[in-house]
Amino acid sequence: MTQSPQLSLFARRAAGQAIGDLMKVGVEHPDCLSLAAGFVDESGLPADLIRSSVCRILNGPDRQAVLQYGTTPGTAAVRSVFLRHLARLEDNPDVDRLSPDRIVLTTGSQQLLCLLTQALFEPGDICLVAAPTYFVYLGVLEAVGARVIPVPTDEDGLHPDGLEQTLQRLDAQGDLPRVRLVYAVSYYDNPAGVSIAANRREQIVRIVCRWADRCPVRLLEDAAYRELHYDGPELNSLWSYDESGQNVILTQTFSKSFSPGLRVGFSVLPDDLVRPVCDLKANEDFGSPRFSQAIMADVLEQGSAYADHVQQIRNRYRIRRDAMLAAADEYFSSMDGVSWRKPDGGLYVWMTLPESVQTGFDSPLFTHAVEACRVIYVPGELCYPSTWNERPANRMRLSFGVLPPEQIREGMRRLAQAVRDILEQSA
Image (cartoon, rainbow, N blue to C red; front, side, top):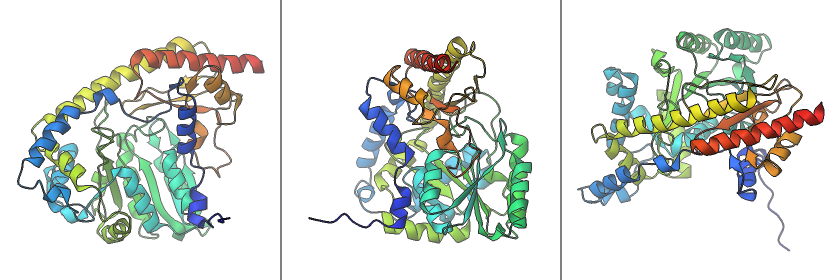
């Protein structure tokens, strides 16, 4: 009999990721309405734009080249196109003069999160995160053996004073040399839909820059939802406040704003991290798919085509968000101890239940919601470090990205019924 392989420590740490559990629930209960899936609206995907782009590319002079291997960070021509796109987002023509050598193209932004974490962390090194934060990245950190420490967060995002106090505490404990990264989802974050407020952005960057003189800390800005903006002010990136360009790492993706199937992301790295990240990337794939990158670059170069598409999906998601908020008002407002936030963008609504109602996979609520009420949500506890004793157990992430408005309303009705049933059972 063949023996089972002895898995590495890295593989054992990566086992049992929550995203797999959520996908399993969805597959095993196909009749459930999913308020969990962080997917995009399939009906709004740009098939016609991509078809036209493919025709132009395959009828053009580079039709053979784009089907060949490229370079690990991406071809210089495509990186220059993405740099111009970033300059437009920043409303700053000076960005266009940044060296393309600092741009690395990846298979979505998730690959950059993984590569950078591998490049920076030894077991026991420290990452500071907002509480709550993107739960898939928490799994990445746990896989490398990082210590994940939450920083106080409120409805205006990561709190500068909380970040300063956390660093001071780690310094007093002698742990400052182990601090490698501050991770922040800066726009309409996953899971809470919160953006870091305008008056905090420069403060946070200055704090990181100041402490970087004493320890190897960098700020990783995950701007995955940046272009899904519906209301409120347009905000400058955290990266734009880094005068040296060497303390903030910016990563973005076209998965949310254009097509996740293309799997195209890009990042701006400090000079000393470009080579380590590319060395790790070369071990994985020699470079992300060149054809997908060529399609994305071609679309960006077609006048207002990309901007028009983004505006269309903003309108679609705004309608879905409003449908979820209206349903929350309709079905949850009569319940004591239930609250939620209105996000100005992104794909998620963050809901808090009474403290007596736990929302985890093993909770009565989750089981009842899935099996009796036929609705799925993301348990909020996944979005906090698993080692944090104070993580709340009564929160939910609700996604409005996939379902049409009428199904969002029905999903919220079912979820409210599940919560009401659990409250009645515990009364």
